[in-house]
Every structure is written in C-alpha cells, then in structure tokens.
Image (spheres, rainbow, N blue to C red):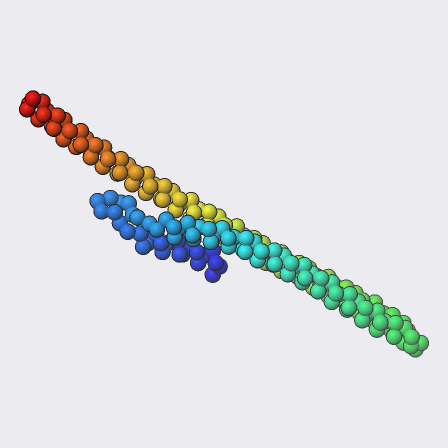
Length: 186
C-alpha cells in the first residue's frame, strides 16, 4: 500500500469520525486535519513519480546488462572460434561450429534483450498506470472534501446569519417597545 493510499484512508477516517450536527444531514469535520492530509498527499505524489522514474532507470539498467551479456557471449564465441581455426585438422568443422555458436549467441542475446525490453516496458506501463490512478484518486478525494468543507462553511454562515437576523429583530422589537413605553409616560 502506498503512502497516498494510506493518506486517503486517513482522510476517509476523518470524514467517518465527523460529528453530526443535530437536526441536519451536515457533519462537523476537523478542517485542519483535512488540510494536513491533503498537503501530505501533495507531498507524496512526487515520491510516487520518483518511483516511476526509478522503474524507468531500472529498465535502462536491465537493457544495459542484457547488452553486456550479449557482448560477452559474442566475445566468448569469437574467442572459441579463433581457437578452433588455429587447429589445422579441424578448421572446417571449427568454422562451422563457430558460425553456429555465433548465430546461437546472437539469437540468445537478441532474445534476452527483447525479453528485457518487454519486461521493462510492462513494468513501466503498470507503474505509470498505477501512478496516474493514484493521482486521479487523490485529486478526486481532495475535490470531494473541499466541496464538503465549502458546503459546511456555507451552511454554518447561513445559520449564523439567520440567528443574527432574529436577534436583531428581537432587539429592534424590544427597543420599539421601550420607546413606546417612554412615549406613553410622556
């Protein structure tokens, strides 16, 4: 499980632990915790990009190793062919055997390189797909949480506005009552 997956689970835990607001479908969440988790997700995303780059570098290393092994096989085959040619009695047989060894070495080297390229491409493709899915998932979760926080803030501000309006109306009514009472006295 990657750091981003863990952070997304933490985010879900914060949302699951949210306190219900009585008489509404709204919940109170720890905004600071959510912001911290979102920041950690942003910080971890480059880490996963680095991991994908490391896989690409590993692919290049595998290809280089395959080329080196192919060159060594060819070099050994050439040395063996030269030794066989040096012997007069079996020169023709040695040449035929050297050609066969070279062909086999080239074929094995090419096969090894092709296998390494295919394996590296598959690893890179899987890593890229996984990294893209994690980034997309993190971005979607972040958007969802931001929308939820914004909705909660809007609802809270509307509730405060209603309370203030009612309190102001009560103050005006009381004030009008006091003024009416004073006018009756006068």
